[in-house]
Length: 152
Image (cartoon, rainbow, N blue to C red):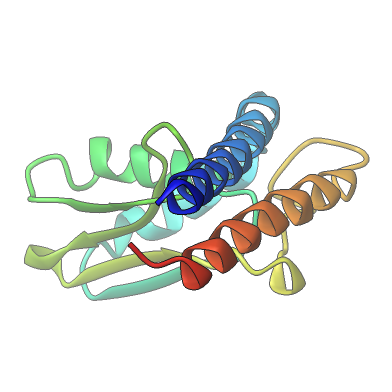
C-alpha cells in the first residue's frame, strides 16, 4: 500500500513539474507573439467565419491561444464557443476551439517536428525553447509510465 501511495506522489510530482515548465514557456513567450501575423490571420478568418477547419502548427501554444481568444471575443462573440483546454498547463490554455453554430473548428498541432513557430514569435533564438519542451515531455512520459505500472 505504501509503494502505491509513493508512486502516486512521484507521478503527481512529474506531472506538476512538467506543467510548471510549460507554464513558464507560455509566460516567457506570451509578450513575444508576432501580432502582425496574428492580425493577418484574424483578418483572413474574419471574412470567412463559417465552415472553417483551421489548424495552426504552434508547438508552444501561445500564438494559438491568443488567436482563439481574439476570434471568440470579436468574431464569435454571439455564438456558443467550446474550448478544449490543454492538460499540460496549470492555467486555462486553449488547444482547440469549436463553434457548432458556424461549423468552425480550430486546432493546434503541438508536435515539435511540425512546428512553424519561427514566424509566430519575435524571439531570435526560439529553438532553445524546444529543449524545455522536450524536458517537459520527458516528465509527462515518466508520469505516464508510473501510471501504467501502478494503476489505481
